[in-house]
Image 1 (cartoon, helix red, strand yellow):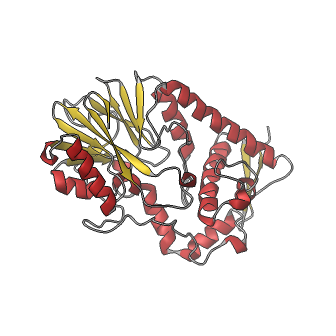
Image 2 (cartoon, rainbow, N blue to C red; image 1 turned 90 degrees about the vertical axis):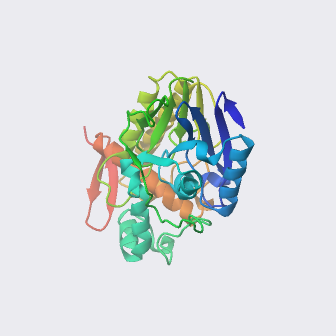
Image 3 (cartoon, rainbow, N blue to C red; image 1 turned 30 degrees about the vertical axis):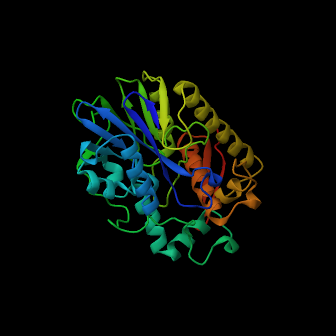
Amino acid sequence: MQVADGVFQFKVPMPSMRGVADGRLRYTLVYAVRTDEGWVVIDAGWNTDEGFGAFQRYLSEAGIAPEDVSAIVLTHGHPDHSGLAGRIKELTGARLAMHRLDADGGDLGRMQALFRDPEAAHRWMARYGVPPEELPQDAWPRPAGRSQGPPPPQRSFALEVDVVLDGGEEIVAGSGLWAIWTPGHSPGHVCVHDQKRKLLFSGDHVLPVVTPFVRLYPGDEGDPLAGFLQAQRDLKKLDVEMVHPAHEHSFPDLRRRVDEILRHHRERFDEILAQVHDGPKTAWQIASSIRWNVGPWRELGSWTRRMALLETLAHIQHMVMEGELASLDTGLTVRYSPAQP
């Protein structure tokens, strides 16, 4: 589907997955953008034969020859965005661009480490209040369809990246497409700003309905939510008339949507504060007591609950570092209470 002059949107299907925005994200929106230096593909889609076939069909319907694709840029390294990058690169001969913080696996590398060490995952979850009956046999189960799919080429998370991005650079010289570092959803997430067309390809950083997911993984000592919120504010300075995200649908009025996302997080901070006013609580107790758009806590599956815990921890970490919460570490468990003035 053509969404702007010289811009096509491809709906590359995702495999069925439990616990991913309640099944509402059925495909990745991949974009092909015409530039003076050839076509640039933004994101790739999940690595399945169905997805690769859909990409090839869309490319043909748009009248784009594979050899006319000069670059592939990934907004981040999650498999619904990077999975097909190797196959598309092989098909087109294009150069692959990605932020350096996701090029080596990013947060998915930490997730993979959990899969490899169930005992460590159990200890970590128990530390944040996950009760014994909630600790599954494999510690951190994969949702249905979580693997990236079959070869060729088969990769876990690492990709052969030709252009390593830092943010702030033109992705292809003369293309008018600029990389903007927008960390949070992943450490190396980037948005792509088409300055000539006044378009923003926002990846998963700004979505029209779903609030982007920001996690805190084991071993993280930083504040991923702080970077995410600041990157949201910075986007309001851009001259953008239309946003093309990687899921859901395109939408105008970037500033309004950013304000909605910022307001959502402020409301979540307030909700967490309300939960701890009557006494210290673990992260699991807090997560199980706050509202989730995907449904009541008791109806959420084990994978969704664990993702909710990681999201809650990201908020808690931010509040601790901002002086809104205090952490009480007994050595076995961590509980949180309002910070004393």
